[in-house]
Amino acid sequence: MESNILEHLQEFLLELGRGFSFVARQKRIDVDGDNFYIDLVFYNYVLKCFVLIDLKLDKLTHQDIGQMDFYVRYFDNEVKDIGDNPSIGIILCTSKKDTIVKYSVLNDNKNLFASKYQLFLPTEKEFADEVKKSKTNI
Image (cartoon, rainbow, N blue to C red; front, side, top):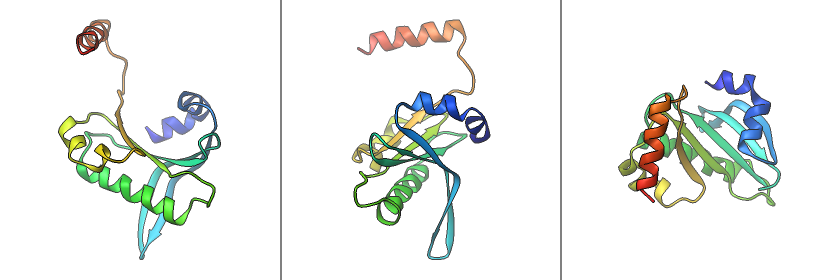
């Protein structure tokens, strides 16, 4: 998925919105001799902050959330400049459970987000069912 995003980087940046620039893929950070890799790093010139994206090929776990919280804290302390705003962390996953979100730092931190993605477009019936479901939740 990461390679696919990079292949279509221009379209992906347009999807993200205004002001995004690509910084790194598999950005290595070294903490006390241990290496960690952030899937995608962007900088937004409008928001004046780094945007870190972690791509998960499975459901969201509390470990994923803790990992992203670690990355964001590292960037805020070690990478961002004085004039920059706090970094934003986004986890893209295939599914997420509300309870995991409720009892994690995602619930309290306004700069950490998790969003699910689909590897394929839904069928017409699946799409119609989702629209009906969303209308009843309003």
